[in-house]
Length: 455
Ligand SMILES: [Zn+2]
Image (cartoon, rainbow, N blue to C red):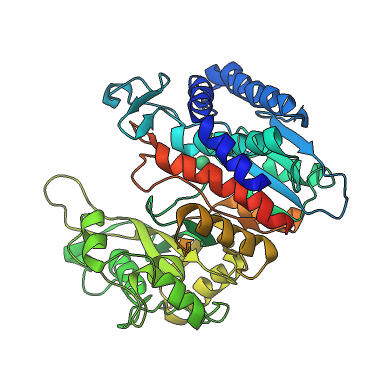
């Protein structure tokens, strides 16, 4: 009954919540440009004030970069679960400005959408948290303890967040984390992201002589660095589309049958996928669907190549050096350090003795996966199903979200990822938008999540 009252309150106050969101969206909290530092601070203070008004104990945590908005409202019963709400209040730059139909910091409703920089990523989701909390507090008391962590440097890679998590480990201790900085696949299909791929990125350099040579005088007898590198790369996949680095699959967790069934519910056809990519066909590992290939299986890609003469006209050169940028998307339990050893082992086995090679580390992050059988996850499933009328799909995102791994490593808690950003919301692009009917369903789902978690 009390939950229904909170949901009704949220419905009756949509206009006001929308006005509040528009106010927050007018603040250009662009973290990457130093001239916007004061605006980024203003967004933090706006959120701080809202949380204080909701009766939270709230403050800004001092940081080297933009401050963290921290808040807590604890349940009198210490045995009640504590949920930590993660979010970020910074946004991407709005440029190129001339491509916006309406100015990025003048939030405008057109049809069912609200257009503004940050509408979907992620001031809309932040407002959904606040609206859910206010609706409960206006009609009841919070059924769980709630803590808040809103950072202001996510769009620049959260350079100070891991240190802040370590420093404030006690303050941020919790039982579950809600992170709504993820996608929902369609307005009718509530989505829980439970897996994120990691990354291992390298530069591979090969050298066959001290300098480039005349291809007429030396070609046919002296090895060509371009040819060598091409052959090494060509050998990195077998005809079945599998990566051939020694032991590459040793740490890869298999996709379990129930997980396959969940992934099969993601409504993507091969045709849609080809059209979305503007490609001419698909490739990949035999025995896996496209959804599995891009989310649940590891990959190896060439991201760039450099070798020999590439200028206008012709030059008969025998290149002495070649370079490739290579990256692997990793799945649990692969580790970037192990993958580097596997790449080096491959090169020791395959590279001819007359080639010098070198592998340089560029970036690395491990993959993450969230268990689907925890009480918090079950609460999220029930909340989404009740709010949307459909059981949520479980999706794996192909990209990496370092915040989720840091929270897992430092706070020891897995994140429940149930965002309200649609794939066509133009995140990071001109004309970013938020689909308002999805926002309102999100508010209801978050209200329900707090009550379900208390059960
Ligand atoms: Zn975001």
